[in-house]
Length: 178
Image (cartoon, rainbow, N blue to C red; front, side, top):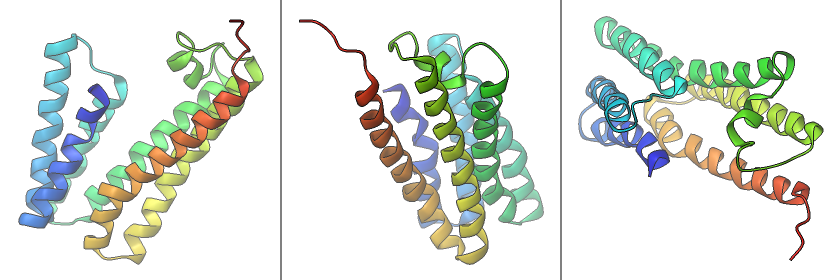
């Protein structure tokens, strides 16, 4: 349920864009993301760092989009978030005892260190690539097409990536005795 709530601002952005325009959609996404973070704090007394980064970028880039009436700012937000995530994965390869992905999943999963590192590297490459793909779409397609890409393409790629990761993980799970 928590993960589904992550897509609410994106979906509301799409609906507002299709109903009104990119500027109304940007304002709706800013409000929805603020409500989402507030809900997370009130419900769980914790807001994940990525939600705070997203909120900060939505407010700054969305605010610039509305103030300057320039859609490029809101389009760049997606790439910046994906690159921050990619850097977090890459940085954890070098710094710290556990990789970023190991910190997130090791409570539920036991894997050899090389598998954690490979998995972490794949995540870093994936998120960084999404940022670059977004830049390509921004500059080579219309705003209408970019909105569809952001709303359906990116989540679709993430689902496909996580399915492929699950298949990869399944091959490396330790054998259990029955």
